[in-house]
Length: 236
Ligand code: BTN
Image 1: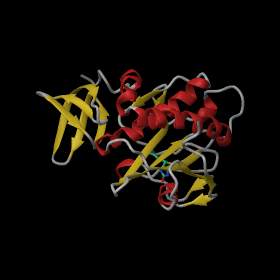
Image 2: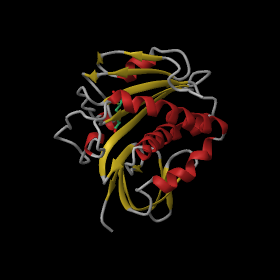
Image 3: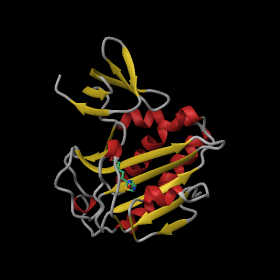
Image 4: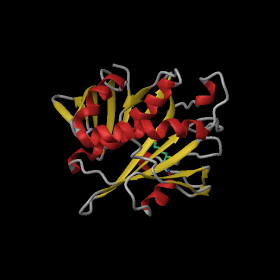
């Protein structure tokens, strides 16, 4: 069943599909852009969005408990990984929102929530398909076209992504914690030494788990669960 993408709005070139999707109403409605002039990433970063990449956001109206909504960008990353696996491209996820191939970032996810009587979550995916890669990046980047033999276009990926993303959404609505085992298996952050910069302090230690609400559990003189912030992998 297609729960994400029952309605797909093709919006050409926009500032950000995160804004377009905010104006949508129906659960699972999607806005897809050919390019974005002000694409956004986490932590106020820019997401360079030249034609040839896949840039989309969905409006979700989940019934899952509000304290589980932090999982949405994580299982969205798993959906991207599912699609890459179907193309024989092995990917990992890096908490909280990167999808990596060969240690290089191929996709990022972003979610914003409005906790009204029924919560509205806008979740976006930027996936490098055949677009020129940005030069100045925090994590080295890669694109799908460099990992498959045949030419690949954003619409080919979209067609595979919508059912994969829908399946992850359905599973989340049926049992919000159902993605945790897959996350633990796919998340390359776990078992690595990390530094997490928070307001006013930096946590350092091994990342040991993904918490039921999607937070990253770091062992730093005790278990601390991080729900936002920049995570950097550091050598032990
Ligand atoms: C990140 O890695 O920091 C998240 C990147 C998310 C980018 C996507 S592209 C579609 C949607 N529109 C945006 O402005 N951002 C997201």
